[in-house]
Amino acid sequence: MQRAVVMVSKAPGVDACKRRLVPPLTGPAANALQVALIQDIWMQMAPASHYDCWIATPSLEGLQYFDSLTSHLLVQQGNTLGQRMHHIAKTLFGRGYDRVVLIGSDMPLMTHALLETAIAHLDTVPCVLGPAEDGGYYLIGLTPAVPNMFDDIPWGTERVLADTLQRLAVAKTPFALMEPHRDIDRWSDVVFYSQAVSARLPHFSRWWLRHGCDANAKA
Image (cartoon, rainbow, N blue to C red):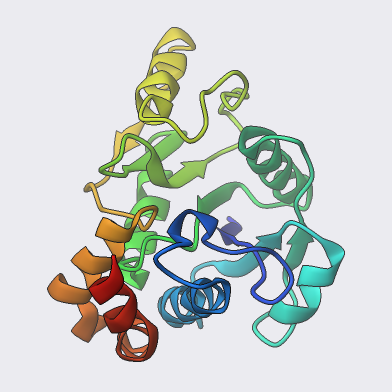
């Protein structure tokens, strides 16, 4: 049984990162936040013995940024987030993986244990989702048995999870739900993590001391 965990992420210094947070952040500070989140999440992802760690980034140029982390790299393809995720999963299934878990780079509390739990769910159901508090999801795990459920989803809205679950129900596809978490989309999310759990996030904590405190005073 072959398992893959894929971080779907923009490449700092190549792609414009965290644009929703500018202002109160400057462009360089938002870019630095992306760096910190990637480092904290990757620290939990790898090394791993039960799954391979992959990164999927939007462009060929972005591969150079992630090359120091892993040789398991993919370039995203597609016009929408759904098309890009579908392509990633389809590609890895084609390479022999039978369990694929996709995560973003904006849920700082991603842990190795959380990923292992998601993979374990896929031994009993073909799909697992980690609900985000904003109505989306921070994780989705798939087996090849899952039909394409990424089309016609209103990405970036509070309907993403609900519409995805409806799609699974219509297809009569069993699924599991994990514990909900808060991802970082808005400035209030950044402040939440700075106050609540920053001690568990060393790179984010250093970023906050350097960039976040001043931005918060101006927000």
